[in-house]
View 1 (spheres, helix red, strand yellow):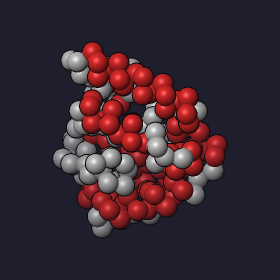
View 2 (cartoon, rainbow, N blue to C red):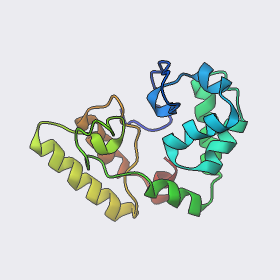
View 3 (cartoon, one colour):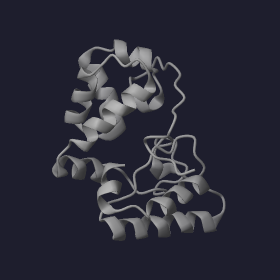
View 4 (cartoon, helix red, strand yellow):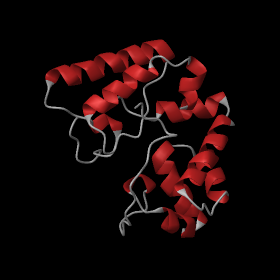
Length: 165
């Protein structure tokens, strides 16, 4: 199955450390956060203050699906300049393989098989050449070969669809 923002399921566990949504604070905790902390938590996920603020103002969310539907709606309403800013914030897949600091990010994807890492590099280059921006995917919990398969699947999308995924 191709993994996209629409079908990805994130397992949440409460984190008493810094409030970073991509580290899994949970939906109920997110709904209860003060505005500034909630915006910061979302900003850490997708690097857009306007999108984070609009999504925060739409709380509370009754389910993860409701949050994702709202995020989709807001994302599809963003202007091209905002989309460009978001896409430019993400590092290439596998750029910092095994990085402890970036372990939940796509740049930390790694595999012991050199052919998989070479495939990621080649697919990343092909994706950039085809679309003009880097590949973006929530990769936490996915193996390198699953990310590579998603990259190959998404290379079949058109430009407009891919900018919004």
